[in-house]
Amino acid sequence: MIVTDDQGYGDMSCHGNPWLKTPHLDQLASESVRLEDYHVDPVCTPTRAALMTGRYCTRVGAWAVVQGRQLLQRDESTIANVFADAGYRTGMFGKWHLGDAHPYAPRFRGFQDVVCHLAGGADEIGNPVENDFFDDTYYRNGVPEKFDGYCTDVFFSELQRFVTQESDAPFFAYLPLNAMHGPHHVAKKYSDPFLEQGHNEARSKFFGMIANFDENLGRFSATLKRKGMDQNTIVIFMGDNGTAQGSDGNPANDDGFNAGMRGKKGSTYEGGHRVACFVRWPNKLEPGRRIHQLTTHRDWLPTLIDLCKLEPSKSAPHQPFDGRSIAPLLLGEEVDWPQRTVFVQRQADQPSLEMNPGRRSAYPKYAVLTEQWRMVNGELYHHGDDPGQTQDLSQQHPEVVEQLFAQYEKHYADVFAEGEPYARFEIGTMENPTRLTVRDWHPDTIPGVKGRVIWKQEQLGDDKLFINGFWAVHFARTGRYQIRLSRFPGDAIAAMKADSATLQIGDQTFSQTIRADESSATFEVELAEGDALLQSWLVDAETGNQRGAYFVDAKLIGN
Image 1 (cartoon, one colour):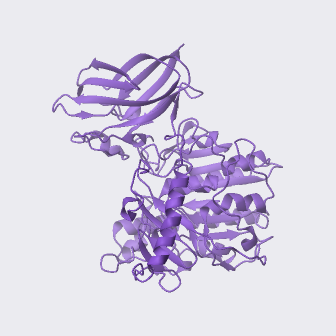
Image 2: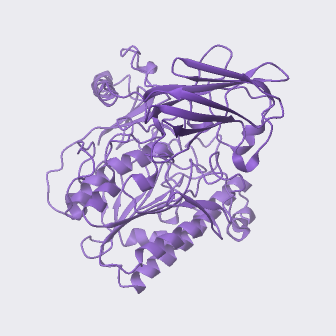
Image 3: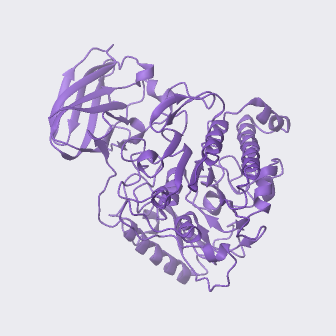
């Protein structure tokens, strides 16, 4: 299962891109069944959460890319759990983006062989500060390891090692690449040809990353064939959301290409979530056939259970899938395929359950998809007649709008039904200490504080930035804990420039005076087992303004 990052439907030559040449991806497409009305979520984490579980991202707790909402709830069974329970070797190489600490990291979610970066990008906060996609440090089953080479080359190399390993067991391999996510870094030999065509630097590097991916895909396909594995290996290719560098469908402000779709990455218009999906399995599937029924990434887990004759996972309680098995469509069977309604959503940190359900604008950005209609934020488009979503028909068909919106209201209440409000970081458990970072806190909304997170390494040193937030945590045992606050990571230690530090855990508050040149503040506190919210305050020595500590290392040190 190969998932590229930020590569939209139009970012390949087989879909008409006038500048890109992707011969190996085009070859895969020609040998595959192609899903032509295939939808994911508009951004990274939600797509990954739904793909791993067969369930709506909002239902499983991972509906945003930061803010502690990128953690897949611990009681969810994953596709890797299902395959591992069936005796498959399971491997994952690349970008996980569903949590890095216990119990969220991929090695705790059914994957036995893992090489990945942390956070949402190889160079983002939480990773070593020197990571820049070349010769980076990644994590092999949780242990940091220095790798030589470009990120995509490294992850494909690890994939090839895994699938060609001598074993009597079948395998499930997941390759969620961090390419073509920004920042767009790639060797000049890949990007220069696009600069010479007249593209700007960002798009040239984006296209260059795709060219590098295509080259790696060709090598991997050749390896499968050379090893005699190509005929009975299912290869699934898909994007994780709409294009990051293609057109947004508005020719007045963008000269890119997006196969005629409106919107791009992050949008609930079609171009934000309709992506390519190719399925190659020579032993079973007819190459070149196209499926035009409405399908989604949530369909893959139930589909693979059917195709591979597996059982739902024994390692976690079986939750009902939101997806539907599309095995009959893939196999070309004559079936009466029922109509379906699919929901797409961009949700902020807190689910807005208190909103007035009568106000369509009160909900987050959303889309309701059927075979015939697309309703986007209350606007209505006829999918067959207007795939570019240029003519809003909501005034002409108010009854359709009301019907689709009623379905969305019901869906919204369902996925945010009562339950644990947070996926919590585990403190004092099998991983000790646990590191919390600024990208994973829930933004505070108190007056005078910017309710936001940061995720770029260079933002850590911005002395004019004063933000704060809290982490949802669970203390595994009653005992004595050491809580260390810092503004900078351990591989880039620097002064916090603060004269006091305050730590609040639940209803307990601890404070100490510190020097402006100190790089950390450490508290040792007695805490009870259970859930809590953890927050910190560093008072800037020069301005008196407050920011939260960007890093917290929490460790159980005694009973």
